[in-house]
Length: 250
Image 1 (spheres, one colour):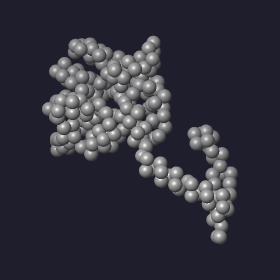
Image 2 (tube, rainbow, N blue to C red):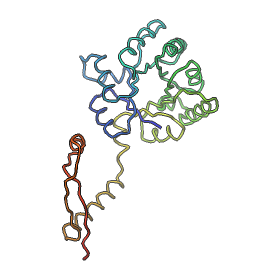
Image 3 (cartoon, rainbow, N blue to C red):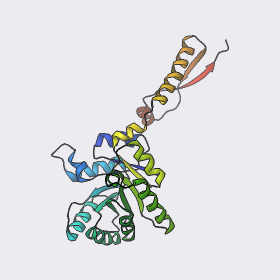
């Protein structure tokens, strides 16, 4: 079970990666268009890879076989962590077949049905991306599409990993994982929402208020002790010492 971040915003990626729960990133032309105009595409992708240090999907925009393959080879030459997003379709599958044999990892994108995922896997794709929200737009149950695809892959020992994208709610994330997704690629706004819960916040506040009251009343004594602490950890956590706690009987 892995989470990728679905964005090209460097600040969002830095923040998400710092939490330790993001294992990759996905981009597409629409996502790239949201970034401030005038940037170098290659430099932007390399910057993302430098932060994530794991798979980063980059999508081709050519619509012919030769164009797809040439574009994919160019992107793949930038870094070993680049995964090439290839659109589902006859030409796309042909490109995947060639690229995977060359050792270039591919991610077949815009999959809306089980039969498409089967073809992506059989063509040798490293990843198959099912679009949760867009499957639902068609009137189908995305949960069932993911679940049955996963069952087929498991039954036939298919190595292709299922990525679920087109996430529009927190429930989409939960249901995608419950259905068997190997990876869910999540926009940053939903990743932040995953950390939040009103009852969690109320509970933490309650505990901290009680702790503060105990200190104010002198019911507890906190003795600060300087301990060896690496510079990097001190900078990351903004702490110079740890605390030892002594309880006083009252």
